[in-house]
Length: 239
Image (cartoon, rainbow, N blue to C red; front, side, top):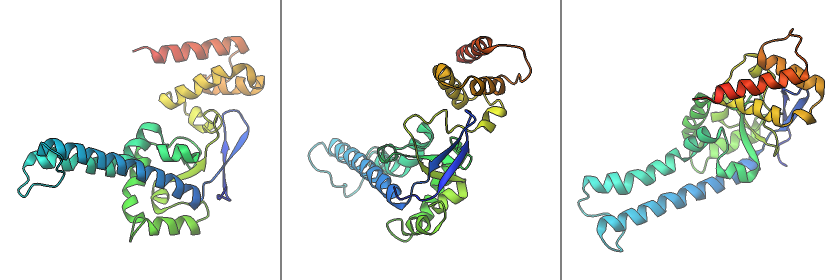
């Protein structure tokens, strides 16, 4: 493990969780995997589309390319290559295939899933991190900054951490629940809480339930709190 620092998260279980920050080695490994995936996809699209356009095995651009050449042959591979990272990160909340294989994940500085704005900002600054060649600026900043972050992370307020296999409930910050934000991520955390209800400390799960339900002083017992959480997720799941 090349990340020496760590992010301590105030988790919903009431136990601080340390997420080790990924260093330049893990970052580079994840990036190389993602680079090969997007390069292969881009080249494959170009080759197949070019042969279709040229009605044969020729993949060279015509001397006088028409609009169809640019729309069907050139634009899609360019979009695949340049939108690969933002599209994957937004869709998966910070885990591209390369990051998943490297066992790392993008998180916000409070340990939660980063927002769409942060992920997009992180990728906009990828242009600066890639200067002057082979991500030299980004690699340098990950080597000299305390949390091994590149400029895009500094701008977006994100970190790259080693993610445990079962970290959804642990690394979701309590303060997100305290704001009672019933977005998709919170509902997923509540579902995880219900699935792990019997394995959690009774005091911890009661505290979590009361935070989610914004009902700190009710006389409901353990069973009633669990039922109210189940009713809450069922209600939110209705179209």
